[in-house]
Length: 505
Image (spheres, rainbow, N blue to C red):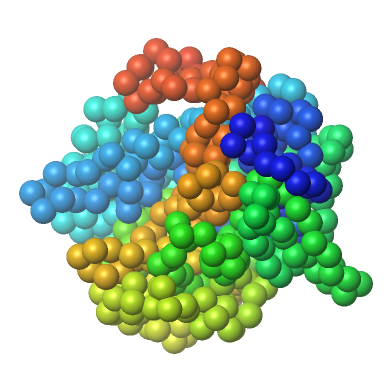
């Protein structure tokens, strides 16, 4: 541990991880690989790992690499396409694939076919304005080596060969356009997360506790953190002392960050957004679709509501989903309380929350409309992507909760953000992850940023640098600016993760 972590006083653990999702799993594995002697305790409120946002039904499941998600490439006022965020996300996903490849090579996780599959990523639009946008997006992205293999077409027959269902029953004179990246993936983050925790709990000085809830956390005078834990099965309460705490509890992170009372956590609020899927129940239809097809979000819709017709592998079985349909709930977690939102409102964040609410009235209206949708309304949205759809072949599935970040802003008072945000104390003794998409896909890069903030001295050592580069060979390099490195890296990770020839049949 870094010198500033060498606090006085007795501790029960070097590190406490709160929440058994993809973020805690990633950080836990990284730390144990970098410092095998670390003692780690992990606390999860539910009875299983990855049961909230990391679960396959609650997560987008797309290996978010910005191949098909149009919200990552907005059109600017001058008509040009902004690709900066897309490039960053694509690079971050390559970092994740390298780390997962390392885990496979070291046999720290099971067969990669259990958690990652090759499935093409498509963007699909119709109408003159949207087609013009997609062509400009294609032209802009393919200037970058990360996207050089992208295909573009306005030929209905070629689109039909890529994804037959989206063209069946469509008007013959309807203008359409699509892009396709064959390198796309489907990732079951629930399986991957549980794999990582199964490995972690077999290692020395690691303890994983389910059905345990964190009730409070407070910094001690000696610099350590006192964490109050309740065993939900027995009702027993106890205090645990740690040098470093990570709050990776998804929607539950904000209330715990507030309890920590660190200055850096002041002024943050949360805006919960719920989701639903239409799940196909007709096996014949499921077998005919082999792609993740993303479209354009409705005006006012949050990024997590970008509509997509989505082939998945869940628990070893092929599935087909459409959605997500957004909604509003005051819960911060799928298994949370309706009091989560009101309880999160504090004196230090009430102004940013009110300001963000006033600046996002269109979003609020959109979410209310989504909540009031009938089955027939949802079917009409599905028919835009699958014209022959019938209600009898689909059923509603409830997805997870996302808590979008609200933060202070000098000009506007408060702004609503749709990415992820790492909030850490100045001394690096505690950190929390707030926000949502594209979180899971970029978890490795997010945790590397956290290491840089909270373990900077350790990270600068030759030992940690060498180990990081063993786990992530391109660490410190840019794949977006090195065509040969990009190709070599993708070839290697595709081979190790067995995603070269795993397109669903």
